[in-house]
Image (cartoon, rainbow, N blue to C red; front, side):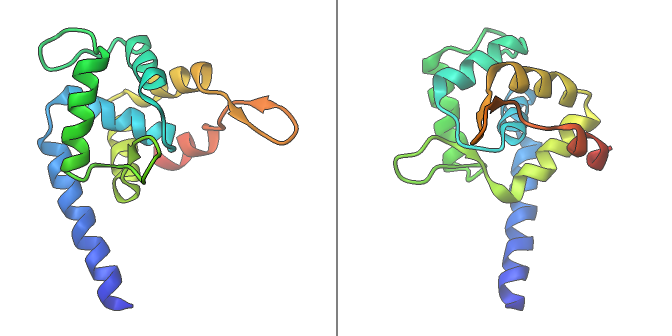
Length: 140
């Protein structure tokens, strides 16, 4: 069991290093994935990116083609994960790091607003939004 925890810690450190080496536009993508905290299909994700005004490395808006290439790179790097036949999501060991970085860089609140406005979640009793109040208090 100790080896497993040690391996997770090493992997998390590797993921963090890769994340902080990314271009800021790719970091913002990872931050958005981390706040969404679930697999998300590309069209919904690109909608969120456009709402936060995110641009890719060449200072142009994200489109499906550039987003697909970037997601493939992030999957290859292990920063995003994708189970068979599901949409991509932030690697679980990177989620907290990216979310905390979003707070530190002043991006968290706008990411939360976009996610709350655009990605309602299904509950058993009604459609609702994700609850970020507690998370905001914990990461500050």
